[in-house]
Image (cartoon, rainbow over all chains, first blue to last red):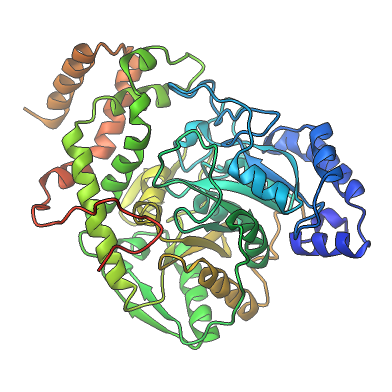
Length: 449
Length: 66
């Protein structure tokens, strides 16, 4: 087995002990990208000279010499981000030292390339990008998930063992679920975000996508700028909101998540409590409107009329529609957010975690991203957003845990925790890994097994 | 007037008022997206939020005060 296939933490330990040559590891990584990326389209840029310079100058940090990828959502000193698009309305992106770049550099990591993403971060599918869609390693004709499509496809495809994505309305958790990875959406404001083109965001965070929780902990500790301590949780109270999050998920997804939930409960000697979320129907529209308001300052008629033909017609239409949303609705979305935050704070006085399927159905085809749910057929975006946006609207952390396969495609269980309890999510994920003998985190797509 | 017609009027008037150009395909996208958004937006529009206190200077990294 190549050192490239080891977890991040074992690569770092091997480099520190002298057993792994970090220069060879980087060469192997770049060769692997050359070999597999034509099928995956997960990586949109490599820059061997800059990567080797990062390695030469790497400090003796916890990730010294370890190759990682970063989503096309942040500038690097030698490359402006493109956000997977031919243009970002009203914004001219520039090269620079973004927060995640600095965090990775200071931890000693080596950025081996930039990972693909859904155009402008606007979908949970990952099926549209100016570079062409990334492909799901579990089935190259399936969506990898979005908007962090490239980070997910690259880790699941074995190009690297960890990547940095971004999550504004679920964009780390959906692709982690579609690709069978552990992904962490940190508490708002806790992970490095400097240099993001939406500087005023209150929904977007950077976060790790890795094969398991221990690697997520290592990578998140770098972007948090503080170590996330590990603990063995006991007596956890796990809240479950059945309707619609469980009840309206595909049977195979629900069964895998139920089984994992029971394993987690037993592993932590915990209990499961049935919950309901007040004013649940307001969560999705409020989250969408709050998020769109963050970019609305650039949606002038001049900028909207200058959208290039190279931008997908879906995004051109959506951006122009956003330009017409009444301010009164946006104001009401902030009231709904205040209410949702208070409601969630009350729930977290009763439970430690809240659990439901990360996505209600497995990855749909790239060419037709619709899913079949008990309530009927719907777009993957509609179904996924319903499951994912609460964490972004309120600021709490969330994680996707791989919990098995449905019809050969990965299923993910989402856990939410109270503000600042990011480490607890990873503790719970590790408890589940132990309880299941790491069965689900060791699953690999046939193409890379 | 049905919802589709009402939206089309709103769309036409809004695009014209703001001077936003949109071709037929973009208008079809807008109508399709609006049909997905409309149920939720209607609920948000009609929800009784009069008694909800604003969260001033909300700190999304922490639970709300109190």
